[in-house]
Figure 1: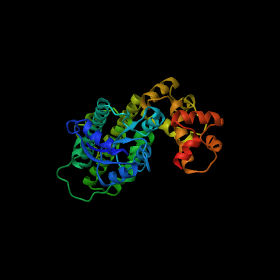
Figure 2: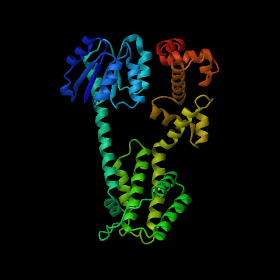
Figure 3: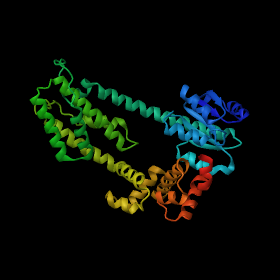
Length: 377
């Protein structure tokens, strides 16, 4: 992993370079800079995997650096922030922006090692997952291997242009994702009719099936973060008949889509990711309203106690605390980017009591709304 050290005191960055044996940890220090602006310039030019940054720096501090790198998509680098004992409010904000860990100054060797190893472990896990997905994508893009998997490969017929009914395949995939059996039947029937009417070549038919499977593989992998990617391919393989009849009757294509829709439903139920994504969207769309966990449970037909449990498991905090974080984050953006009065901002993010808003803002951001505006305007 290529590491960038950021601190306005050169003696600190030099000390960090010598504090641990970076090479033995699978890292190399790619550079040392003195503030967030220099760090962003460096990141734009160089591939950086890990940023170790101080919070308090002139021109552009560590939090602004972290926020801009993530929001502007400058890098996928992991972040470790360094802070003083009196800056925990800033640390909380850094953690919400996705930093891996934080270290209290003066930096201890063991703490730095622990944080770096944590980042390396996370990176290894992500790369392993990316490798699995890449293998699946490669399999899905190979029209002949996928066609063979579901019994539609004809080795004697490889000629003809590839005609892909992308919109139709997308609609079938959407119907499968929603487990809408009537829509699946309708969309598959329309596709097969079009294949017959336009006398689509066998090669193009197989190519459409490949594209559909590519979409379905992604849908399954999105349902559960912990799913073994091989499980998806195994389900597809186990659902295959000994002899493919899609070309002749289309019966298997319909049968497969209906079975796969049930499989998706099972995955969604197993991890409840679908409901959680819907709840998250509701929070971000309606944070200013008086929404509650009970309302969400009724809307999405799920037990409120169970929803609370899986919500906390996924996000590491309660529904109420997550809602508060979203409100305060939106308020912070308004404070920094507008001249609106604080009492008006409080109302716009869902707080009728401005004093209560100020209290929550201090809890989350470590300072009053007025001070935050002065420091960030």
